[in-house]
Length: 63
Image (cartoon, rainbow, N blue to C red; front, side, top):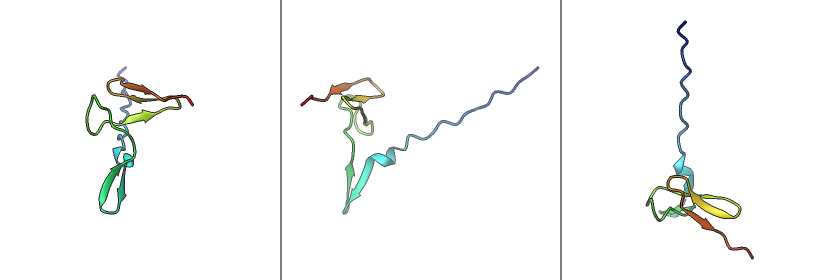
């Protein structure tokens, strides 16, 4: 009665999508979290930007 559990591989974070090359310089396309530091990007929502690691939230201004 030993059933083997299926092991799911975690998908890579694909952080390379948040960088772009402009000429000979590297440009970040998203804001970074001020609490966590470099390499942790903020998620874009319709009314806010949030950090998935620490929960830092910035609300966007309504016009």
